[in-house]
Each structure stands twice: as C-alpha cells, then as structure tokens.
Image 1 (cartoon, rainbow, N blue to C red):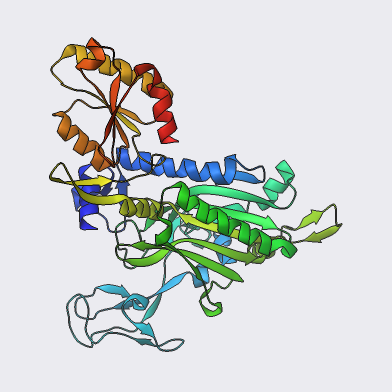
Image 2 (image 1 turned 30 degrees about the vertical axis):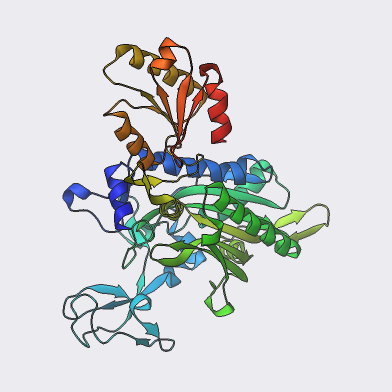
Length: 442
C-alpha cells in the first residue's frame, strides 16, 4: 500500500486533501490521472446499468435534503457507530474495530490503548451519529437543520413519485445515480477505502414483490459482470451471504461482494433486497401516496426494491491495487499498472524517437493529432529519453506507446507500437494504426 500511495502522489492520481495545510483526515483529492481513471469507471458503470437498458432512469438528486427525509429513513436515530475514547491520550476509536461486543450494550475492549499503550484507560462506549449536521438558511433553530447526505439512495426514493408522474414507467424499472456522500467516520483508514467524503454509484430498482428473487439474481450477475468490465481479477472477488442478524434492518437478503485488498478481504459492493421499507417510510412521514397501480393485474401496491450499491472510490482503490505490478524488464526492476485499457487514464502515448530532431517531432505530432481525433485518452510525450518515457507510461498504466522513428519518415515503414505488459514492439503501417489500436483497446 505504501508503494501504491507514493505512486499515486508522484504520478498525479491522488493527493491527500488540503495537504499544504497538513491535510484533513479522511479526505482525498483526485489529480488529473485520478480524475481520468475515475471518470472511465463511471462511464463503464453508466453504460452497463443505464445506457444499454430501457428500464433505467438517471438521477442527480440534491446533496442537501429536508431533515424529515433522514428521520423517515432512520438515519437520525440509528445511523451510528460505537465510539470509545482513551482517558489518557484522548484518541478516539470505533469500539467494533478494536474490541468485540459482549452484549447489547457491553464491549470487551483491549487492556491497553493502541495509541499510547496506557492500560485500562477507557471511557464508556458511546453511540456516535456519523451524519454531518449543518444549517440551511439564515435562521439558527431546529427548523433549519439539514445534513450532508450519508448515502445517495434516499434522493431516489423521494423522487419515486416524480418519475411515475413525469415518465409513466411500468414495473419493473429502476433509478440510477452517481454522487457524493458524506460520513463523519470516527477512524478513516486504508487510503481511499474508508473516507469521510466519497462517491457512490447506486441503483434503486422497483419490482412487484412476487418477482424480487428473479431480479435479485439478475443484478447479482450484473455486479459480477461489472467487476470484469473494470478489469478486476475474478479470483479476488468473493460473495458473502449476509446472515439474518448481520443485515440492515430493512433488508430481507443481502450479498456483500468482497475484494482481496492488501489490508485484507473487505466489502467492495453490496446487493440488498430492501423490500418496501423505504417507500412506506417516506409515504408515512410525508403523507404522500407512493404506491403503484398495475393496470394489467388491477392491483395497487407499494413496490419492493432491489439495491445494487457500488463504492466508486473503493472501485478505484481495487483497480489500482489489482493493477499494481512489479517485475524485471531488460535487467531492470520495473513498476507498472496493469490496467485494462477501458479504465486506463491514457490509452496511447505518442513519442518522437528523439526530442532534438524537428522532423521526428513534426511527424509524431501529426500521428498524435490523427489518433486523438479517433481514440479517447491519447497523450504526446517527448520528455526525457525514450527509455524513461516507456517507464513513465508503464507506471501510469498506458497500454500502448507509439514511436515515430527514422524508418517512419525516411522509408514510410510505419510506426512502432509497444505493448506495456510484454514490452514487445510491432511495426504498424500508418494508415492501419487507428484500426489496429481501436481493436486492441476495445
């Protein structure tokens, strides 16, 4: 992990949030390559779950919502972690991360503080609500209270009626959203894995309750297909059927999709059968009818919901850790990101063989312009000698490097295309280059 974090900073993927001021724990800034990687993942997700379907509707709900939303969802009263503080050093921990629960309200904690090693120095365990509270408007009373949303799901549930009234969809149908969520984590850790500000890709898919099992299985397969889309090693993805006592109160069935991160097997995605809990809660609290009338069966009922939930930042982390590779090439140690072309920030880098030959630079720029017009994610690189350029592009995961050399301009023998993973080169005719690369990238 230390090597990967260093690479991410050195090559412009991810930086510590507010780093010039010493940072802010649990926040991360995406640099140019990180943004490109993250956007590629978003596009792949949106294509699979929205663009290629005719039963899904995109959403982008507001981050700030009426406080009653969070009362109805149960977040105000129940969205909490157990907090314990060391009396000596005042460091705070999640009790469930450093100890074990011995009963409904009792905890078995370690003898000494993990931070200062003082023995038997624990304050009583308290419940800590993780929502960020804020005020909306000029008044400063209870009526102005709002929260930074801890999940994107509720923005879709409260818009259920709007979708029905404006687009008149027939069941089954879903709503999909990519957006920011915020949780005041007691102990953010493991780089992007547990942060206070993060991005989710979520679907709320509404069905007749008689058909939930078929739909659940469909999305189970779709989640696994998405992991392949972004290039994750299938052997590192595991399904965990969550037991009755461990599921969220609203769920009748949940599968956690776990991934083998360097720090252990941890949750990457979730698939939950939320029943009709959310729509019923919002209907009760808002006094707005959120039922659905089925014209074929002549029945009126509250639809049930299947929810596939994807952490975008966790996906970025999984993709990076899975791709991080060290090997030997040409007698030298090499570090590279073995990214699948669809997620790589740059697909192709174009080089002149030498940076001090104007004729090579001019021709390389012509090749670059042609490729850029036909392929997303093409970069021109003439910084340093060609060996250093290869290593730099390997390290940021660029699958192919195109080099313009003297054979290109003197003999018209095309350009060389180097494969990142093997280091092998192939000479390709200039008029066949776009077709060749498109075939390799797709």
